[in-house]
View (cartoon, rainbow, N blue to C red):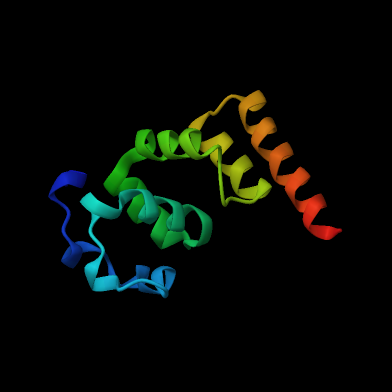
Length: 108
């Protein structure tokens, strides 16, 4: 199934908990792809990640990570995707360092 053919009705119900602050029935892959990918990567369980990979493909996940510089993901999650998607280490190192700098600022 291609992302363009996915409709709101096709978003699996197990994703509902990831979008507690949105009208789940109003979400659509075509209109909300950025949000859906981000939430799945940051807070999705294995079923959500498996669904996302089967729908969007690793290329779309890689593009999202690169466009957002891994935004919203923990260092552990970023290292996971580094391995799975064979992202360049220096690229992920920069994202992780950015998270650690932010975390140190928030501790003050």
